[in-house]
Image 1 (cartoon, rainbow, N blue to C red):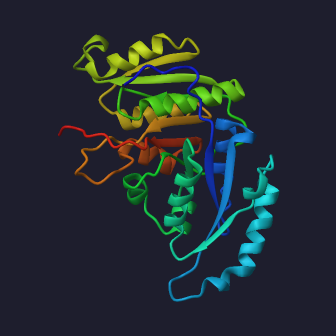
Image 2 (cartoon, rainbow, N blue to C red):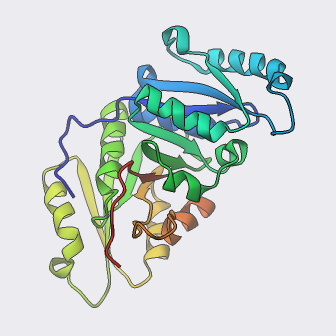
Length: 270
């Protein structure tokens, strides 16, 4: 865990726009994180392998008009770009690399269904920092919770929260969970994060002693507009996963959820 520098706000986000998704939550999240001028919306249409790409010509025109309506700030000649492809996820990866974005933001489950890609594939092939959001993020965020212990994605969670605080003046709270059999001072994994949080007075701190972290996070998150958390860190030879805590909250929470993973692959010792 490296020190967070306060100038490390998220400055460029790409959100894919698909013709059979509403993606309102993803677009709301992008604007509250990075501001109107730093959001890039790019259209994607999937065509089955046994069909010609030309069959999507009408849909492409409609999606281009949708993009024009969604944009709050015009972005030159790329502001209504639509990609028609047999492999929309591959096209999106290329667009992320080409545009050199800070964050790719995907809405679960519609983006994954429409891009014909699984969460596991996205996490294992991350072309940039990734944020997966649920369907419950609105245009205004007042309070945020970051469950944080010291994993490799803690810094990205903090960057996103600080970006939202910078653009919306939203309140940030961190949540530190530790089991009954150790003290706060004995939680070695949290020590690096603890040093960072001490230098971030804008973040309020909550602590919960529990042997049931999934339900502790779930219950605490109900008090906040938005929860931001890292995906599970896995050894490089294991299948990537968002993890049981994030999965429960993503599926069951009625409030906004953002699950993040950095572009870098971290080798975790078993």
